[in-house]
Length: 380
Image 1 (cartoon, rainbow, N blue to C red):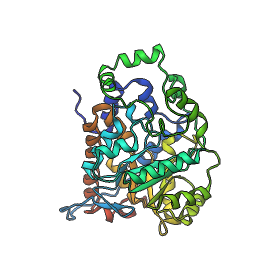
Image 2: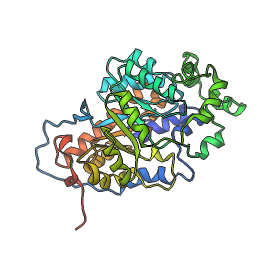
Image 3: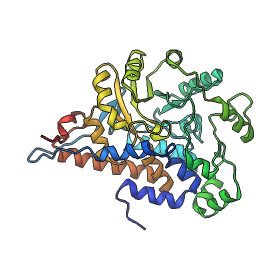
Image 4: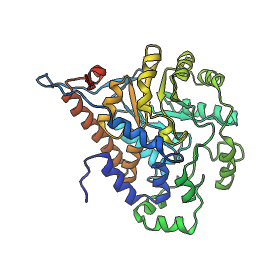
């Protein structure tokens, strides 16, 4: 057994335990994957300022995101098909996040439903909304999230149409998955994963099947998902969604200063600077590279969060230093989930917490809320 020291170790273990088509789904970007790579690579270009002979005792990573107390400024990002990385994946990840004291965000395109998550958690979780053409279904989703006690709604803005991901096409991945002899072979070589899937009834998009009009099985689901993402989504939709929801609203997918200014005027509580993990517009800049200018433009009017490319606690610190009030991890927790189930998600969070805590101390800070641009090294 390889000792797990970093997120990359969890990634390699997940690669060995999850069928290729599902691992590649989580680990892919659009087209050439240049933006996916830039999300990680641009973090490495940011250097830190080492400080010495400062009091490093009594450190605290606690802070708040949209007014809610968090053990550290990290939330689990909404990710589709999470329950295909590990049986009941969303439920396990939500439990791990709750026990750790950080937010879990459930995707509309999850395998486990809103109600499934509510049945295994005690504290409120967050729900991520995709706006579909069927507005009655969208209203129903919002109302179900309210009924489940969700404490924030994350509205994704950058998936009006789907970016092309070559790995998914080559793997023949569809929604729902269609199992060819190649897929069956992939699963047969992952017996632990198969045993887990045999032990659960949650193998479809349970937020949709049985809730959307005319969607009662996998075949009808395929037709529905192919035509439901709404390319007409616009700022007026944000207004009625906010009114219907009535609680904290976070807008995900802001990558441009002008869009950030419009978001700040929308009445939303926070924005997430994000390029969808490099899975939509290939060639777009990395999230971390545009974060400072967006913070400078709107950070005094709306809370700014950041998503994309975070693979360590040091990355979290760099995002905080550049003005983010909170960060999100998607792939790191998916790697942990695929590798070790709930324990792997907890381990991913522990790795990031330890790296963030140690790096913060070596930069001369004792509290996460005090991290600012003064921890960054600047060439004279």
